[in-house]
Amino acid sequence: MDQDNSLPNFVVIEGVDGVGKTTIARKLEVEYGYHYLYTMPEPFKKIRAELESLQYPEARFFFYLNCVVACQRQLNTLLKAGYKVVIDRYIYSTFV
Image (cartoon, rainbow, N blue to C red; front, side, top):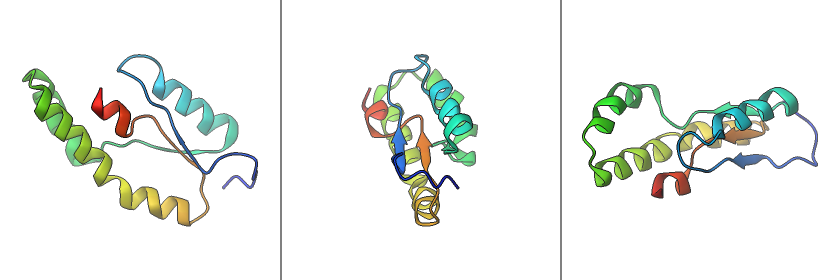
């Protein structure tokens, strides 16, 4: 855990696919001791490719919204334990 109180406890990197969100999040993890939390839980990864192939925007929106909701318990646990957390997709990327 990083004890630097000048850093925010929770950082969200938002943006459309391919702009470097994960790259920046991983740099924060390495350089500042953040815990990187990927917002797509393991079971969701299995259906992502199939969903993306459907080209159905509404289904994509609800899929990613559910990913954000599903990671909340883990996020809250990490923050309560004193970890500084960085996420590379949250609610605004879901809307895009």
